[in-house]
Image (cartoon, rainbow, N blue to C red; front, side, top):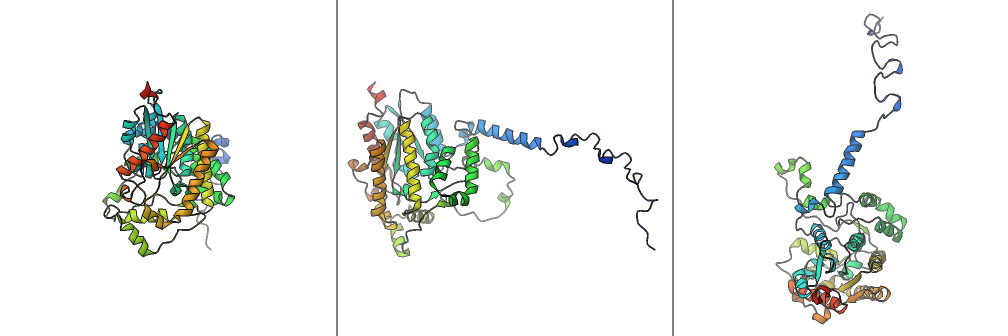
Length: 404
């Protein structure tokens, strides 16, 4: 007969329910600090580490923090815009403050040295970034108002109001406003919030603690790579293709305005060798997104709310209606959609006292004033800049220090 392998002769001294000197015998944990549930399971070290990380983020990565030492000029970084805003805030208060904000069209469409030379009584902040679309601008409003500008200039067209709405998990715009998120949720239906819940959760967390706003800028400066083991640097891998900075779409009530390949190639052949294939693909896709749909109502409502907040704060808002290259109009329904944008600007002028102007008095932009379908050359940008300055002068903005 087989017997148990744990016979009485081989049992440990703690058999028959007694564990000898085991401090946990009979349910007692001896000197275990977690006994009776006091503090049991609470990861104090992790909590303290998290609080320390958030505190460091607030101290180092705030809008005026030392992260600016690592800021770089990059089209995919908002760092330069925040540096400009910091410089404007530090300017003497007796000088007129003007903020020019918008997407990448502002990068070349506003020539700052021309503005400073022709309007010496003003100090300008140029906040130009590809993702400063309507929702990002609404997120920026608290920071713009806090800078106490006399005027805010927005260079825009149907490219801004009629393209899809996009969200970023951590705002690449580095803006933060819980009110803007709440307004967006109110403007959309419940399905929008459910489908984009992850992005919204992260945006809410980022805005609530106003931290982790400049992660993208630090990554572009190479600092973010210091915290990881760079094994990939020694591996022979092909370089990754340039990413599309405008994805993913959160709200779009339409589809691309289709254009056959032959017509598209004809359009893109207007700009060799300045436009590489990646830029050509990006711009054609961007322009074909200009469509009617439910997204237009939301984009315009966000911009209207931004205008209302600026005007309530006593800040003048100037919207400069800037056209695209004539060849761009083959890529979307220009006559109808441009009229919708123009009517929107006129409505803001009538309802809120917004200055809504076109640059025509400086001479219409010629095809040679563009270096691609969207962006202007320095000569084209100078025309747009002079249109802005002319309007500011007519309203008495920017002449205080000069008259003194």
